[in-house]
Amino acid sequence: MSSSTAPEAPIAYTAEQLLESGPYDEPLIAGGVRCHGGFDPDGRYRSPRTLHRGPGILGWQQQVIDAGHELVEIPRSLMPPQYPNVEQAKLLLRHGVRDPIVRTLTVISIVEGFGAVIRDVKVPDLGTLVVEPIEGTALAHLDKGLFEAHARDEAGYEAEGGHKQMWEAARDLALENPKVPGDVLMRMMGRRSRGEKRERPYPQLDETLERMIAMMSQVLVVEVFAEGTFQWGIDVLSDPEVSAEPERAGAMVTYIQSDESPHVEYLRAALSELRCRTLRTVDGGTLAGRTVVDGMLNEVLGNMTRNRPREQRDDLREGLVEAMQVASNPKALLEEFEALTSPWTPPASTGFEPAAVRSA
Ligand SMILES: [Fe+2]
Ligand SMILES: [Fe+2]
Image 1 (tube, helix red, strand yellow):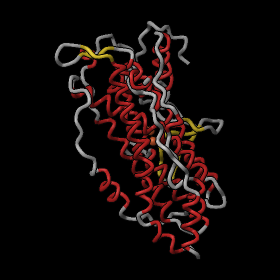
Image 2: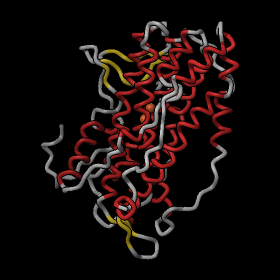
Image 3: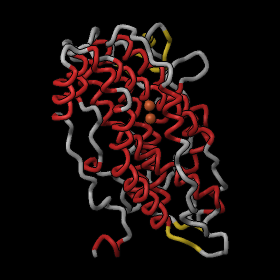
Image 4: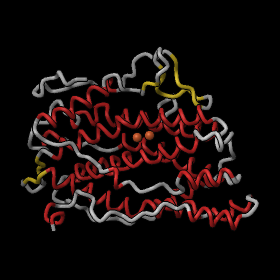
């Protein structure tokens, strides 16, 4: 879109512009809640806050490429399978076992709402911490609209719903306003707080910068892996055999899915910009941005490919057998369910190891 922009021309927007959606022909209403985004006159859904953000991100990415660098790419082969997978979810629903799926969908909606924390990420003075200029880059816009747009997309803004409300609506359409267990959030918090305090991976960096890069790496991987969750949601909720509103529930997830694309892409742009630059250390030295970005991504990918399948399984297993008691033959159902489990072996390499390790 903005490929006509000369690479040397900095691409600059105001925060207001990056938050602008432009006019819609019709708003998106989900579960009675007015949500972000809306429809063009031809009935096509258009994501919120993309009027300038969309072309801006493309332009920033193009600058990286034009300067002879590559964009960070998270290999989709590293994405662990969903638990329960599509077949397992449909099996449970066909047998009237709804609680675990209601729970899974509710967890997804809560996680989306947590996305609002991105607006609290502190952005240090990048102009002094990065050796090369950052004017007119995605990096220069993180705290000038990009993080805020992301937060609003996930959690909603003021009276307008976001992904949290859209997932709830998809769940309630497909499963006909199911009773939502009251302990979903409590259980999630219990698991989250178990994380132990870790050492700083790059203590020679400004701590705010280190934390910002760590957070962005984490969120990028979460956003990329979420593609598996969306496909799962679409496959399950748009199946008329198990969904009461296959078209509307499935469509709702496709709207959320299309809104996620700018999240993945601005994070890719900004991390790629950092990756081809040089960072100043607190002791007056420098460190290659590539070392830090790749190191962080390697860490996140290693953890998530090892732990996420187990965490999802632990979340669901608690209460699964009990929930199956509503089926006519719970024992046979459990066996069938187990047999459908997707095999998963964490990959030996993330592709982001230091060069020496990778070639060893
Ligand atoms: Fe989202
Ligand atoms: Fe997102």
